[in-house]
Amino acid sequence: MTTVQRKGKAGTGIKLMMCALLAASFTSAIAPREAAAAQVPAMKAIGAAGDISFAIAADGELWNWGDFYENPDRLVGQPDLDVVQHLWSIDDVWGGQPFGLSSISAGNNHALFLKGSQVWGLGATDFGQLAYLHPLHPKADRFTVYPEDLGISNARSVAAGDGHSVALRSNRTVWEWGFNAFDFLGERTPDEWKKPVQVPGFPDDTAMIAVAAGARHTLAINANNELFAWGYNGDGQLGIGSAELFAKMPTKVKGNLKFKAVDAGPDYTIALNVDGTVYASGSNACGILGTNAKYSTVLVQVNGLTDIVAIAAGDHHSLALGKDGKVRVWGCETKDSQTVTKLPRTIDYPNNVKSIAAGAWHSVILTDDGVMWAWGDNSKYQVGPFGASTIPNPVQIVHDSFKPEFISVTPGDKQVKLVWKTAGNDVTGHEICWRSTSGGGTTCQKIEGKSSYDVYTYTVTGLSYSPRYEYKFYVRAKDKSGKKSETSDYVTANPTLNLVPVKTIKILN
Image (cartoon, rainbow, N blue to C red; front, side, top):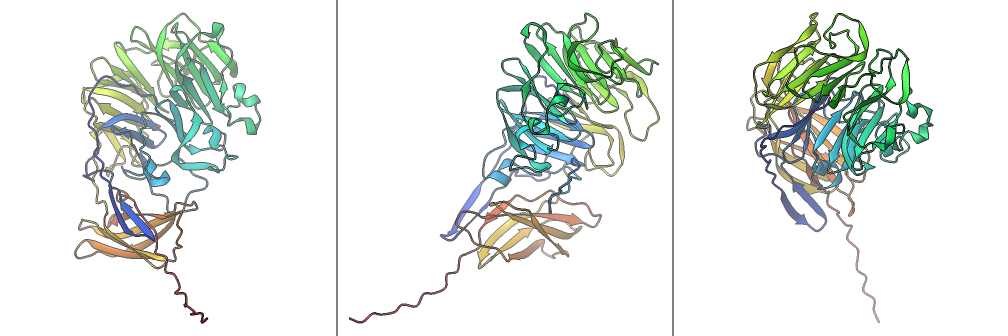
């Protein structure tokens, strides 16, 4: 789940904004996000967990693809996250603020991001893992589709577990929130889950430099390069040399090793030694330890890994990035494979990798030039828009798009007429969606058919005029294989207000 960056250059996305004042009673705006729909922009950060992948473009805008987190309150008209798509930006939802995101930590139920030093998040909120977006918060029920400001500031890094979240703050303290029955959070009431608390129990108030989170355990490294672990220990993943089921408070791992980075799978831990070697503890079901043991309660060195600069733990496999810019992988790499790789294998190309991320059965890497590559299980398109269900070796993520583009927007009495163009011979239909900026759900309408001139029109009726709010619209196309296009750039508009003429009465003196 963890990623790291080496120094490199990334391109900057170009955004255009077209605004037109059509009349005093309504407004509309078309805001293209990218000039070339088929081009994936240069990325600066990546993340992966489960069957989902994330990336942050050089301009700070969030992209994602694969199977979105299970949403118990799935929104009507929510985009299907089944191919690489430029799905949303903050201006789609809250009116013109750029994303500006800089880093990602993806868990199996939610994801955390940094915007400057502010913590943002999306996904499940049922255990308070999105802090103040707990169900008691007016903006969220049990799930939020769009990234939200969690109200947590001065953060240096974040880590997402299953039901809990962790942040390393600028004063080098560690804070935790959400629910984990196997650490000190389990003693809090549901109303307290949403409130971040400083993690107690570190010796001598030593400054911390790194954090990581597994499904139900948490890890932190201090300035002395000592590793601490707490939470569930049923597979020995804490590495504390004990068979105890859990440790409620931070406990130093067994041994005198020094570490500079750490990451966690659901039932194991991997740690990067200051000398560039890698150690692991916990379950060995997929050969993560590189031994024949079923598990280990202490950190053991993984053979074949030297000169490593970054590590990433998936559900069933792990990645390591070498100084040479090449990726090493071991464990259960693919979902349909019965092979367990105990000795890490080196992927020779690409050989200029700067960031790595691992999901359940897939991997995503980012090269110095901002290009993404991925491989592994692709049953949910978490690798990318490729036909094969399994991709054995890294492939470059491209964007084969037939994105609709708006031509005009014409407001009328309680209605808005949309006209757009979708190029492509295989287009078979469209889905038009809209929602009011005053809140509420999204409404969608499907239309079938192919236009001879690639131009389509639809009039949304039954709208209400308001001087304070407007409507946001987007369109998606589908082809004959059932594949959905990237979501169009959004357009905002308001229906006109047709006033009933008032009869003038002349008063005679």
